Length: 319
Length: 179
Image 1 (cartoon, one colour):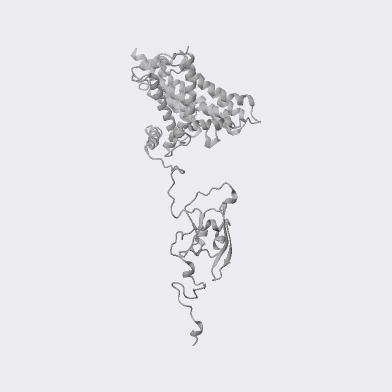
Image 2: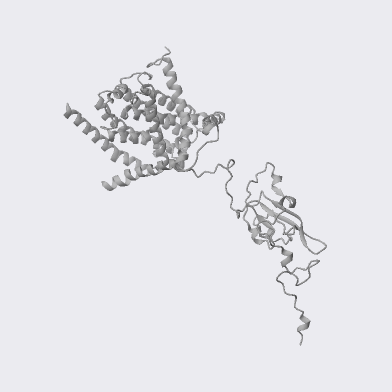
């Protein structure tokens, strides 16, 4: 039971623990990297290099008053942060970290992750609607529209990869990339999935549902204490999830030179993408809301459809 | 189409690159309590009262600083010594009100009140922000080393009559001008 193989208790515990710890540490990593990119230092006071900043933040967030507004719809207000935390953690069940590390070997892995991402939209919408606050309402309105438009071509951009490997199983997709990573034949799909992934995880520049400067933190305006903390950590877990997905689908997952263990290559590639997402936040300004919508529907959706069409044509003509 | 790609995609990539290379530039941050920042000599910080080169108080209690002060944080009372010099009996600055504007320094005719580069003035008790003359007086001349008001002014004090100051002509004897 306690061996590192797919679905053993030890593996499940390790995946859960490591993902949550990594997501928490990302709070520090992000602030530090943003600091460097803005010619600052970032938090470096608590512990060596500021590493214990996360502990300080956790102590602060646990001791804060956990307040539910009187005007809020209590049930959905409480449920909303739990939903997003659950679905992003559930998505990690199908991620293949290494040949022997993973929770389940599902043959519908891609579909499962897309389904979980869609369920995550409920959390954001419920959280905003139940708060009974106009900023939160605006945030959840934006979240709903953004989800609807982005999940369409997020799925379509993945279909190219699925068509090339002929499987929805993420492990088989990784093993099919032994010769060439799918980023080479599916470069357009990769770029579109990257953009959709940023929108999916509500990261800047597409953090329009949150948009701190416009609508004051959007859907989680009314949240405080640990409920806010769950939204906050879930956002970072979503960042890890999207980076892992890009690694698995386009950059060969655990594949790499064999002098280092496969999990190292997976972690290296995923952390490079996490750093890239943080760089996006440091560099790119947030587009206007209608710009985002028209960009999604009028540009990215046709491009992803054409990409899928051309991919299918080439696969058929090579048979 | 080309301009669209150039304006949207390429400019974004360029932005990303320009922000990324900032990773290798030195941070502007001065880690303040560990490294003290360089403070310019004319920085407007904590206010002091200076002494003239002979070691006497420069302040002549003219009240110009108290009048110039926009937040009325300076209070003083004029006194007079037996040799005819004016001095402040008390001189009180309420630093919890002071906005470090430096108007008092500009108004001062004797270079007595001066602002220094010290800015670390936090206190735990509000009353500690009120500084009396003993706290404000320093032993040196501050920014102006040679100036002594009573040596150059026409004010008559014991040991220096009218017309005996530096660069001062003797007073005109109006009666001798009579035809």
